[in-house]
Image (cartoon, rainbow, N blue to C red):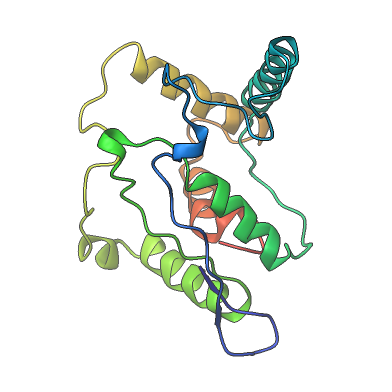
Amino acid sequence: MKHDHQGGEAPQTAHVREPVVSHASDATPDGAGVAAGVGESTPPALVNDLTALRVEHVDEAIRSRRSIRAFLPTPVPQQTVADMLSVASRAPSGSNIQPWQTYVLTGKSLTALTTRLLDTFNDPAQRLMHDEEYAYYPREWTEPYQGRRRKVGWDLYGLLGIGREDKARMHGQHGRNFNFFDARSG
């Protein structure tokens, strides 16, 4: 993780744990795994209670997930970001290839990046000079996905008071993606 402190200090590198496919100590003979902090002498009822509690926490995290389109100006401590990336590094991926590299920018480095991104986004000639590395979205949308995507988009624009014909405000809102919706880390 690259981290550039406010105030012009030199960028520092924080090390994030590499993803681990599995731990031998987590495995049980049936391959089911063991909850962290649970040993062989733990009563089965307690293991079940702990597992149910962990499942409940994961379910709640998924159910409470939402898209954030605005952030407070409060800086996020570097250790908090490193901890989040450490957890995220365990996210599943096809064939467990985990095809990502993560960089976190703050301060002047983040401002420089967002300025360049927005300059390119706002200049049609510059946009033509760049190609996607890969197709993030389908080239052609089919139902039900096209309808879902449109509904979410129009609902968001409606909440922001942006009408279907207001192309300039739509462009401005789309551009907020490139400044990370004013987040202090990007």
